[in-house]
Every structure is written in C-alpha cells, then in structure tokens.
Image 1 (tube, rainbow, N blue to C red):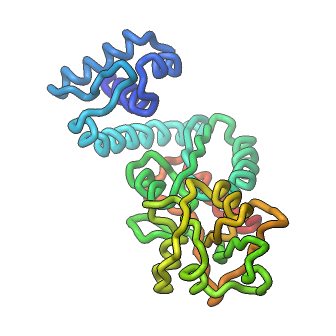
Image 2 (spheres, rainbow, N blue to C red; image 1 turned 90 degrees about the horizontal axis):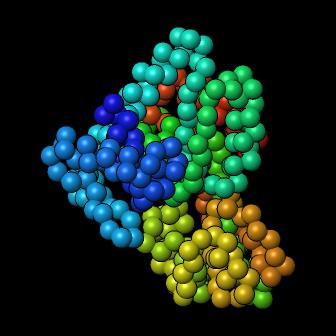
Image 3 (cartoon, one colour; image 1 turned 90 degrees about the vertical axis):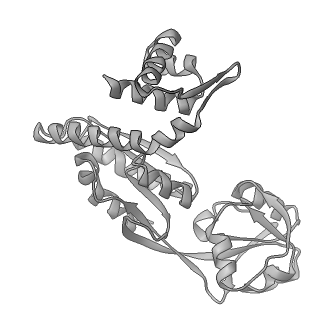
Length: 287
C-alpha cells in the first residue's frame, strides 16, 4: 500500500537513516530504500537527499508533509472507527506536554485507562508550547498540555501557574517577600531558550520590561544551576520550579503574573482519543 510507504517515509525523516528505520520497522535497509524509490517514482521527483552521514528531506518533500500527515490521520480515523464498532480494542493516542511535571499524573491516568482498554497504546513527547501547537495542527499529536495559545483548536483550562523569580541567595532582592517584575530590567538576567517564543518572554513584553540579559541557558535545569552559581536571575513558571537549593530563593513576582495552562485538541479526534479525553480532563483534580 502507498500509505505504508508514506509511513516509512515519515519514519526515515525522523530517524534520518535507512538502517535505523529498517531496524525499527523490521525491514532490510534495501527494502526501505526501494519503498522510498517507489514513492519518488510515483510523485515524479526526489523526496530525500542521500548523504554519507544520513538523509534529509528535499524542499518538495517538505511541501508534501502536511498532506501526508492529513492522509495518514484520516486513515487512522477510519481504522479506529472500525475498531470502535468492534469494542475499541485497538488504537493509538499521542500526547505532547510542555511541562515535565505533568508526566507523573499523566502516567497514572494512562495506566488506569489501559486497564479497561489494553489495546490502546500511548506515545508521549515534550516540547515548547508553540512547537506542540504546530504538531497538533499537523495531526501528529492528539492532545497537548501547554501554556494557553490562541488557535483553531478546543481549549480546556487546567490551572493558573504563577510566574516566579529565581534569585541567587546572596542578592539583596533575595531578602524580599516578592520581586518587582521591573527588577529583571536592572539585575543580571539569564534568558532561557533564546530565540524561542516562551511564556517568560511574553510576560516580560506584556509588562514592558526589557530584561538585562547577561547569559543564556538551553533549559531550565541549566538556568537553575547558573542562578545557583550566582550569575543572575531567572523568570519562570511555578510549574517549572522543580529544583531546590539553599543558594537559590524562589519568590513570586509583583504585580502577580500567571499563565493559564490547559489541554488543546482538535475536533476530529480519533475514537480512542475521544474516549480518553474525559480521563485527561480529570487531571485538573491532581495538579
């Protein structure tokens, strides 16, 4: 089937290697190569750039990806609808989260759900809220747990997450009960995920604060370590405050700033995802 070849193509793009995809899918590398060549013959143009260090998509391939995801999504819908008629015995649900702290409660919900529907498999991924929104629209994710974004999806709020300041314990500001948000314009500031649209940046912009950026961190763990070492301050959501140290004070900012966190999903959920949605919404009770 051509759809099988399309799934092979997507897996090759993810692995960037014929041999890795062959091992995952139970093919030989030459079998994977023949499948891709057959697709290229069907479409009439190359889909992959083959190099010694791996494979990359051509511009034409990238242009086709939204339609490929759409075709495979609707095939999944058809297949799962048939399974629903037979008692929802088989299905797959994909979830993306911007918050690692949600993984524990999420796993508890999944385990409970699978006791009733053991044939339903789950795939969990993490990422930035904006990137997860793109994956949702591409039908590569069924649900995303993110800071609120406006878009063509359904939104179910879970909670409000206050913004917090991470302050080196030896800073004078560490002796205060709250940190004025304007302080980030004067004190050394450590920016997390430079070049990425984050809730931290949005909050600072909404309050007309130009942070005094002195350093950059690639993730929250590194940023916390830099604050612990005394390099500067960080603005982050309470949901990301999973680290502790006597050398770091975690204090609320004033005026109070919050991020609405919730579940985003599209209307055309698969039968399995529709069945899981009420279970997922119950997470509001444990977060």
